[in-house]
Amino acid sequence: MLLKTFGWSFAITALGLVAAVFYGGWEAFGIVAILAVLEISLSFDNAVVNAGILKKMNAFWQKIFLTVGVLIAVFGMRLVFPVVIVAITAKMGPIEAVDLALNNKDRYQELVTDAHPAIAAFGGMFLLMIFLDFIFEDRDIQWLRWIERPLAKLGKVDMLSVCIALIVLLITSFTFATHAHQHGGGHVDKAQTVLIAGIAGLITYMVVGGLSGYFEDRLEAEEEREHEEEEEAERTGKKKPAVLLAGQAAFFMFLYLEVLDASFSFDGVIGAFAITNDIVMMALGLGIGAMYVRSLTVYLVRQGTLDDYVYLEHGAHYAIGALAVILMVTIQYEINEVITGLVGVILIAWSFWSSVRRNRALAAAEGNEGSDEKTEVSSGV
Image (cartoon, rainbow, N blue to C red):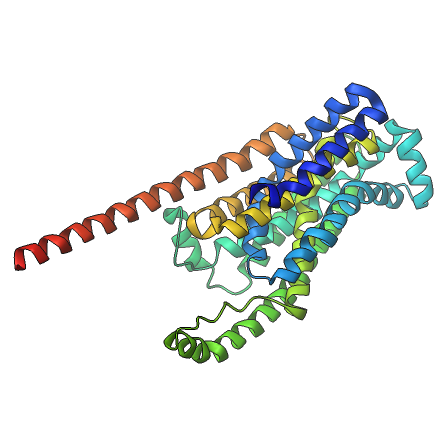
């Protein structure tokens, strides 16, 4: 099972590390290995959230996620995306941008760094909306009840998550403008860039998420229609399989997954520049990491881990909220990538341990009920 799920990741790791040795010797080997570990640690929460969505999709679309999705994630976000950002911000053609990335690495890094406010605002708003929509929803299972219960009540107010996200964006953009003015930069255009990019992130979330939700609702209607058939099938001893997303519903959910993955990868791509500004080594290291995130997603789905450890999804969404805040803060201030990675790992580890404790408590309660029943039977005899 483990080899079947992670086989491609192991193979890509071997190929990537061998390619690194041929490209830049053992130093490149070390850098690529470090980048792969960085990407995995920063994106573990991504895998948990992806698994929550992917388990709703049928086998065909799960394969599409692992094939086409990997190409988009590895080549699109880790290789093409930084070049496109440079091309747009520097107002140059894509061929010139590639040439700059390969032959003038310091200038390339400088241009990507200049584009960071727009990237962080877009990704930060997209991730913030995911967190807010999760935390404002009333759920049967709650992890941190003292936070989640009152917020679920507040969530009954229409469009609250959008209002909060826009307030955060306005505060961030105006804070950025004031800071730049105080330092004599006069970078009012930067504040406008942050504002526009943030609104673009919000619109992207609402469009893609809205379409996904629409088709999910259609699926739920279909499930209700088939509910009687399932009951009949169970009565006859033939259990009907659960209805999974397919067709248009799965397609838009796939798009949602890809935009989500893109938003998660922003911190990895930007953080990679702290280690190297060589685009080839970045693509190799981050690509290896992206493969493991994909494999881990499938592993979580096939093992039913999210069903067994019910708080994992909560921990991942809290990690998303933390990452959203971190991205917005990095528009003006530097935050070490180690801190970014640790926050996500700690929150998910905490939610996992809480799930384990819950499962133990439930098992103990069931054991006590069983022993009570046996006592009643024996006393009745």
